[in-house]
Length: 86
Image (cartoon, rainbow, N blue to C red; front, top):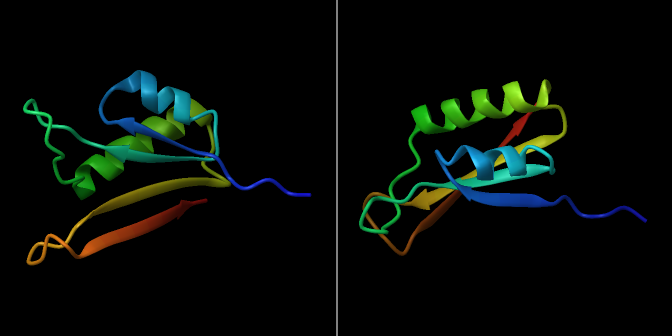
């Protein structure tokens, strides 16, 4: 029997949560503003988190970086993108 992948969530750029996720099958990062509201997870933040994970793991084979957000014109339209990093 195979087990489903375990993805850890964490607030980027808190390195401790990203380091914890590096030991699992994937990371679903979020970014919080100082007022506690979610901020957009920009392509630059995706690249920075990917680089951090690559350094921590030495390889991203079999690791998922999952990023979600809201559409710019309709806050009820949720977008979910999966990046499978090989």
